[in-house]
Amino acid sequence: RELSVRDIQESSDLASALVRSGNTLRAQDLNVILRHFGNLNRLKDLCQLFDWMKQNEKTNFASYSSYIKFIGKGSNSLKALEVYNSIKDESVRTNVSVCNSTLHSLVKAGNHSISLKLFNEMKRAGLLPDVVTYSTLLAGCSKVKDGYVKAMELVREMESRGLAMDTVLYGTIISVCALNNRCEEAQKYFNKMKGEGFSPNSFHYSSLLNAYAYDGNYKKADELIQEMRSAGVNLDKV
Picture 1 (tube, rainbow, N blue to C red):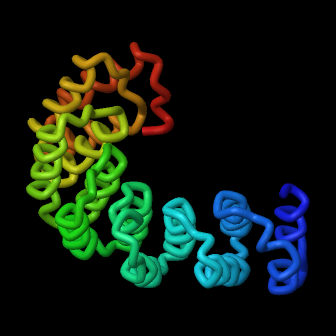
Picture 2: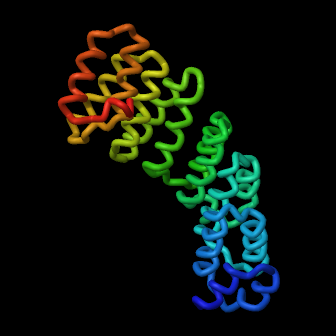
Picture 3: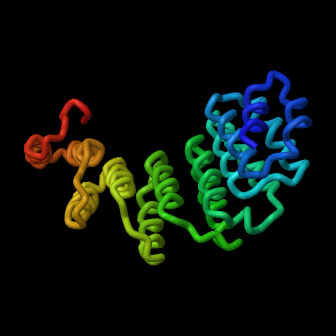
């Protein structure tokens, strides 16, 4: 099957290559080619291959997840949403990887309200969100006015599901707090993160410094800079 994969990847005539080699391949093999085209930004070939896979019933959840991810990369979030809405198989529609790819494309394009509405629809349909789901939506909260309230709702929901925080989530939450002038909350999550054994990086420090700056608390900012120096964090990245 490797020869067939290579034949399709390297062919200048994708349609002929699919006729020649496509039927010998499984969905997982075709997904490799799909990702290959996506990584090379060969969007025309990506779309042609995915359409062929659908017509020949050679898709699985990973096919949709990858395709939506690459389609959404070019800020074509509405096309990604269209693909998601076209999925008939409920097990694929509620697959967390497929949902995350769709939500990410919407958040990246600034369609935060649409992403939250879709998230609720996904949950009602049976989605079990994971840490990546919440991290994606929280990142969207940092880009909208009054995102703090929604961010805190997402954090509480995530905690109620027993999902553990990680450094990425903490960084996003601290940033949301800072952007919404919630200095005490930003410091609370920063300290909580350290208390759980995570080491802050330049993004965490930068976000907390922004919170102190918005609050006009330059004494705290100076103390934090000293802490950064002691921790060996590169100040040039802040």
